[in-house]
Image (cartoon, rainbow, N blue to C red; front, side):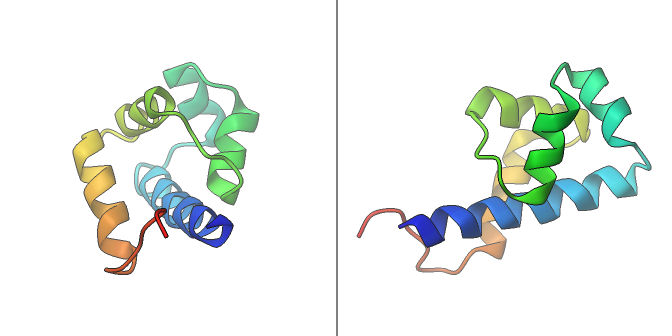
Length: 86
């Protein structure tokens, strides 16, 4: 199960980095904009942060994408049989 969590975090990490770079925003500017620390954002981009739903929602807003689109892209990039339930 731990492997699945890490896989999910890495997929999220890749998407966050992609969208931030497309918008040409620095970690400092986007973290200040949405009110989270640079270290939390940095950990998210490194794939070592498992954000709460409220934080994920802020991240999506900071990236100017709907949360539903971010979730859909995460699901699309995970294997079809991905699950946390054994």
